[in-house]
Structure formats: structure tokens, C-alpha cells
Image (cartoon, rainbow, N blue to C red):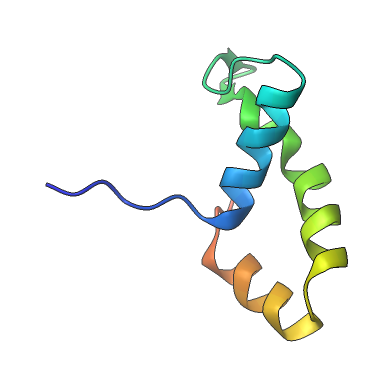
Length: 65
């Protein structure tokens, strides 16, 4: 069975974890560490994309929070 492809938001948040030497899947307060970097990932993605692309990407998920 094929694995579900990660969204660009999740990939960006995971990349930030790696950049800061934080294990992506380590649990913190019941959630994986990478989810704590979604806000920073969103700032960068929103700046890099058109408003239409950003809204489409955000709708793709992940929906956390």
C-alpha cells in the first residue's frame, strides 16, 4: 500500500525541525515536534506563494492545532 504524500506545509515544518536539530517525530505534549513549526513554515510559504496558491495549499492540510 502506498504511503500518503506529505503536504508542502508538513514538509516545510519537518525541514525546520531538521534545521534546528529537533527530531521531527518526537512527541511533545501529545503531538509530534514538527507540528510546532507549522506557524513558521506558513509564514515562509505565504510570503513565497500567490494568495491563491497559499489558500489552496493551506486547504490541503495538515489541519492541526
